[in-house]
Image (cartoon, rainbow, N blue to C red; front, side):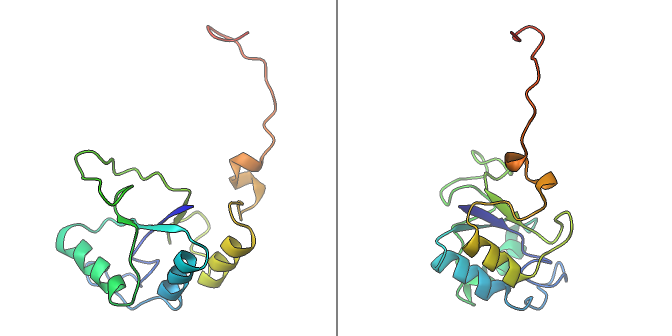
Length: 140
């Protein structure tokens, strides 16, 4: 699974443009998600230039390397890579409902890989969609 992870407010406390204090268990959990659960992590942040380099270095100094940074693949360039990521999941403090606890994130991924952890109203692939008669130019 490809998981996009925000930086400010998710890995560290909000102090932008400075780097805030690490949120407890954030980096350790992300390293476990990579090593034990074998997911690819993409750092997905509004930081650019030197601010982005500082964030990547902050994580690297703590043993966390990302599969890619603000792009879908490590070899992408801004010219060919849209800012919209192709990720299976996003971990972000701006989620609807807020940021869950890092222990909850890890345990949910470990115990129910590929499942939606939210109430079914938020998980479109788990909601039975009623079949309706298609109408219009291509309807039958």
